[in-house]
Length: 104
Image 1 (cartoon, rainbow, N blue to C red):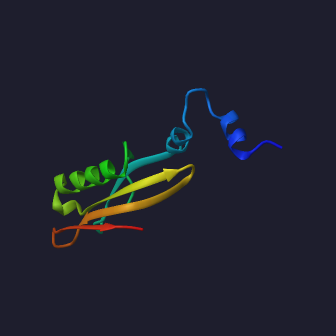
Image 2 (cartoon, rainbow, N blue to C red):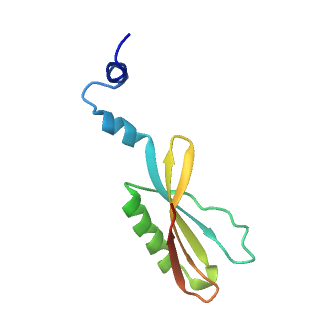
Protein backbone atom coordinates (compact mmCIF):
# COMPACT_ATOMS: atom_id res chain seq x y z
CA UNK A 1 0.00 0.00 0.00
CA UNK A 2 1.33 3.44 -0.97
CA UNK A 3 1.71 6.23 1.58
CA UNK A 4 -0.99 8.90 1.38
CA UNK A 5 1.37 11.64 0.14
CA UNK A 6 2.49 9.38 -2.73
CA UNK A 7 -1.13 8.84 -3.81
CA UNK A 8 -1.78 12.61 -3.67
CA UNK A 9 1.34 13.30 -5.71
CA UNK A 10 0.16 10.94 -8.45
CA UNK A 11 -3.08 12.93 -8.86
CA UNK A 12 -1.28 16.27 -9.05
CA UNK A 13 -0.12 17.56 -12.46
CA UNK A 14 3.66 17.84 -12.89
CA UNK A 15 5.08 21.12 -11.59
CA UNK A 16 2.03 22.01 -9.47
CA UNK A 17 2.40 22.24 -5.71
CA UNK A 18 -0.22 20.66 -3.43
CA UNK A 19 -1.15 24.07 -1.99
CA UNK A 20 -1.98 25.32 -5.50
CA UNK A 21 -4.48 22.49 -5.97
CA UNK A 22 -6.21 23.25 -2.67
CA UNK A 23 -6.48 26.98 -3.39
CA UNK A 24 -7.78 26.33 -6.91
CA UNK A 25 -10.94 24.74 -5.50
CA UNK A 26 -11.59 27.76 -3.24
CA UNK A 27 -13.20 30.81 -4.83
CA UNK A 28 -13.95 34.22 -3.33
CA UNK A 29 -16.72 36.43 -4.65
CA UNK A 30 -19.11 39.25 -3.76
CA UNK A 31 -22.87 39.04 -4.18
CA UNK A 32 -25.36 41.83 -3.57
CA UNK A 33 -29.07 42.15 -2.95
CA UNK A 34 -31.52 44.95 -2.26
CA UNK A 35 -33.02 44.94 1.22
CA UNK A 36 -35.93 47.41 0.93
CA UNK A 37 -39.54 46.26 1.29
CA UNK A 38 -40.41 46.42 -2.43
CA UNK A 39 -37.41 44.33 -3.47
CA UNK A 40 -37.74 40.73 -4.65
CA UNK A 41 -34.49 40.09 -2.67
CA UNK A 42 -32.80 38.41 -5.61
CA UNK A 43 -29.01 38.22 -5.58
CA UNK A 44 -27.16 39.94 -8.41
CA UNK A 45 -24.44 38.28 -10.44
CA UNK A 46 -21.36 37.22 -8.47
CA UNK A 47 -18.24 39.40 -8.71
CA UNK A 48 -15.14 37.15 -8.53
CA UNK A 49 -12.23 38.31 -6.33
CA UNK A 50 -8.67 37.01 -5.86
CA UNK A 51 -8.96 36.70 -2.06
CA UNK A 52 -11.09 37.41 0.99
CA UNK A 53 -9.57 40.84 1.70
CA UNK A 54 -10.23 41.91 -1.90
CA UNK A 55 -13.81 40.60 -1.65
CA UNK A 56 -14.40 42.59 1.55
CA UNK A 57 -13.00 45.77 -0.03
CA UNK A 58 -15.15 45.28 -3.14
CA UNK A 59 -18.27 44.70 -1.00
CA UNK A 60 -17.60 47.95 0.93
CA UNK A 61 -17.07 49.86 -2.30
CA UNK A 62 -20.26 48.54 -3.92
CA UNK A 63 -22.41 49.39 -0.89
CA UNK A 64 -20.90 52.84 -0.31
CA UNK A 65 -21.28 53.75 -4.00
CA UNK A 66 -24.96 52.72 -4.10
CA UNK A 67 -27.86 55.10 -3.45
CA UNK A 68 -28.99 54.82 0.21
CA UNK A 69 -32.64 54.38 -0.83
CA UNK A 70 -31.82 50.98 -2.37
CA UNK A 71 -30.62 49.67 1.03
CA UNK A 72 -28.07 47.44 -0.69
CA UNK A 73 -26.45 44.53 1.12
CA UNK A 74 -23.19 42.96 -0.08
CA UNK A 75 -21.73 39.66 1.09
CA UNK A 76 -18.11 38.57 0.68
CA UNK A 77 -18.34 34.81 0.25
CA UNK A 78 -16.08 31.82 -0.12
CA UNK A 79 -16.96 28.76 -2.19
CA UNK A 80 -15.09 25.53 -1.51
CA UNK A 81 -16.32 22.87 -3.91
CA UNK A 82 -20.12 23.29 -3.65
CA UNK A 83 -20.26 24.81 -0.16
CA UNK A 84 -20.73 28.60 0.07
CA UNK A 85 -19.90 30.45 3.28
CA UNK A 86 -20.58 34.15 3.85
CA UNK A 87 -17.53 35.57 5.63
CA UNK A 88 -18.38 39.31 5.66
CA UNK A 89 -21.54 41.35 5.22
CA UNK A 90 -22.12 45.08 4.86
CA UNK A 91 -25.32 47.02 4.20
CA UNK A 92 -27.14 50.33 4.37
CA UNK A 93 -29.76 50.35 7.13
CA UNK A 94 -33.16 52.11 7.23
CA UNK A 95 -31.52 55.37 8.42
CA UNK A 96 -29.04 55.35 5.53
CA UNK A 97 -26.10 54.34 7.76
CA UNK A 98 -23.33 52.04 6.61
CA UNK A 99 -23.14 48.85 8.72
CA UNK A 100 -20.72 45.94 8.54
CA UNK A 101 -20.18 42.60 10.25
CA UNK A 102 -17.51 39.91 10.02
CA UNK A 103 -19.15 36.48 10.09
CA UNK A 104 -17.51 33.37 11.45
